Image 1 (tube, rainbow, N blue to C red):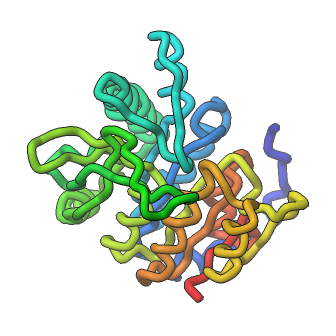
Image 2 (cartoon, helix red, strand yellow):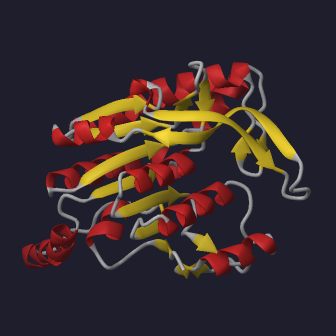
Amino acid sequence: MTDTPHSPAVEAGILAAALPYIRRFQDKTIVVKYGGNAMTDENLKHCFARDVVLLKLVGMNPVVVHGGGPQIDDLLRRVGKQGQFIQGMRVTDAETMELVEMVLGGQVNKEIVALINQHGGKAVGLTGKDGSFIRARKLLMPNRDKPADLIDIGQVGDITSIDPSLISFLDTGDFIPVIAPIGVGEDGESYNINADVVAGKLAEILKAEKLVLLTNTPGVLDKDGKLLTGLTPKQIDDLVADGTLSGGMLPKIGSAMDAARSGVRNVHIIDGRVEHALLLEILTDHGVGTMIKSK
């Protein structure tokens, strides 16, 4: 898809229409979970990098948290391992953890940093082990069918604390933090943490103005595949109970709801397959997804 050329007057009007949003979000923190097709399609990757650089240049503080599911699955296949998920969370044994760390902290993180820098930003790649800024413990998940039973899914982490000082320090130097969702335990062990969960918790700790989760769907869909543009916690509970929300959408929606309840003013799940989805969500009134409400 290519951009349609506009007349100079139309282009000027588009820029002028963004002014109220630029003023409103001036010096505000915006946490973006980057994942899905936006991470694998070449055109969308460059669109995302340009969007992040533009947000920084007009005075906002974007913080990027990324996933890497397809890249991890690809490497697991190459070494003869099959990825396994329980309730949307990746089962992570010691060998898988090594591969996860290699893909997320190395390959994917550095590629995103390079793309943002290529488009004029100053990105810095981090994992939660840097400065031990994301501390975690082993996550034991309640079994949805038997809540009293806890499921051990290996080296998957539950965040115990996030130290915001490293991110704040980078912000003061006009850097754009790009964070791989790996936490560190008390004994220095690595934990794989769901990227949506990290983004939500980070938005809460940084007192972010917005949390934006990019996904491979138009947003949250009802049973008939229609987009739900706004959701309350009660509606979300009903959608989980009747099975409309399942799999990878569960940690996404849970983290979005926790962030909304913890004071993050605007929480959105948006379609990362749309070019410049981030700019559409932040700098226009043409949102491209679902807004999660706190009540």
